[in-house]
Amino acid sequence: MKIIPLREDLNDTLKKHNLQKKFSKQKQLFEQNTNHPSLHTEKLEPTRLLIYSFRIDRKYRAIFVVTKEKKVEIIDINLHYQ
Image 1 (cartoon, rainbow, N blue to C red):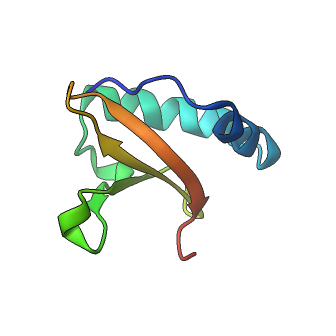
Image 2: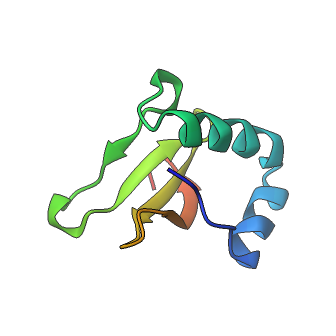
């Protein structure tokens, strides 16, 4: 699945936490295989909302939804246990 370009605030978050390279690597893995083992992709609770996440690193995750066009929109980047 293709990830649409990030909003400016999400790019700022990546820069602030020095995650640009890690995100780029994980994005590439995700677009090749959404279930790649290092991504730890999961559906979040409550599952009826169809919100998912994948791991950027051990601390940060990208929160996303799948659009009607079958593209991925990242809606947040946050601490894993936030």
